[in-house]
Image: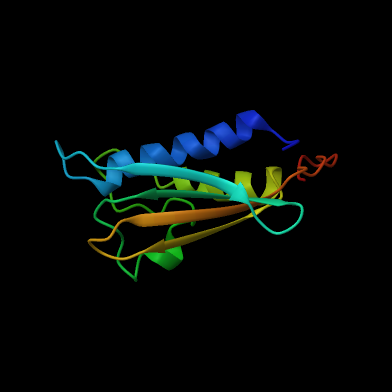
Length: 125
């Protein structure tokens, strides 16, 4: 890939932090996975998943909204996944999808171009 490793690192960090804060009850361990493979020509597909508690169908459409959190008052800002969405779509020029079911964990699928867009004068790719 020819892109922005720091930005991609921030995405992975935010996904891991999101899992550790939301996916598991205190003291419970779990499994996180990160799989990278070639996608369509010119793309790479990165799948990040946890085997935690999952999300309800009512929360899924809102997970990338700024300030949406199920942990308000206990340290959640609701910005982690919003930042992930913006980095993936603007900085890295890709797409992100989420799939989850209560009791069955959560999976994020990122589709990124092998060559990231060059930022414009406005800072967007």
